[in-house]
Image (cartoon, rainbow, N blue to C red; front, side):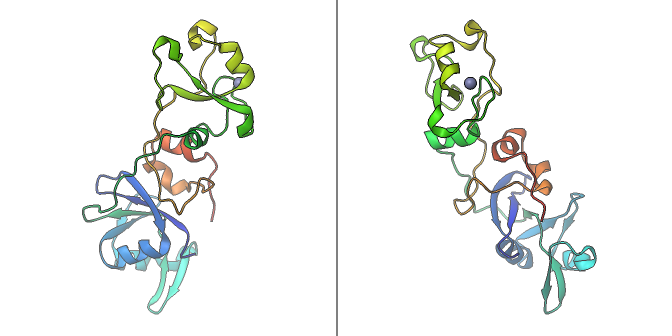
Length: 199
Ligand SMILES: [Zn+2]
């Protein structure tokens, strides 16, 4: 339970990191962070402790009683956690597009997907997050050296650079919790997963 994931917001309520419940409770105890509940109310350590185990979810026994494990914390001090750049590479593009062809929407194993320049390189299309998508081989062949409009094809989703990146200790299979959703942009949430974790 102390290893479960907690979303970290900076003072502007921007999701900047994912940490463990253990670290989140330490930050809460030290007053460096406040806990945020499902109704987006803010609690310091003492008021959070008073909420306690009545609900039974994610409650942890302590010497002084029970404390709930927060799902979201809000940093009270200037964030020392740097915003991480998402590396632009093949692996992360597959991850962003969830191994789905961005033209036909079908899911494929990685070795049956290729990377496609939306605006072809021959037309000055660049190799950037915004111009590279996963494509299955049949869609790639059908599109050829044309733009999607010329080929009469539509993108499932406009490609964008993922907005944030959690720490490396949380891998890509990690699932977003429903309490995180108000703080994740559509892109972040879509990037992660649409499945919600219940725990
Ligand atoms: Zn396809």
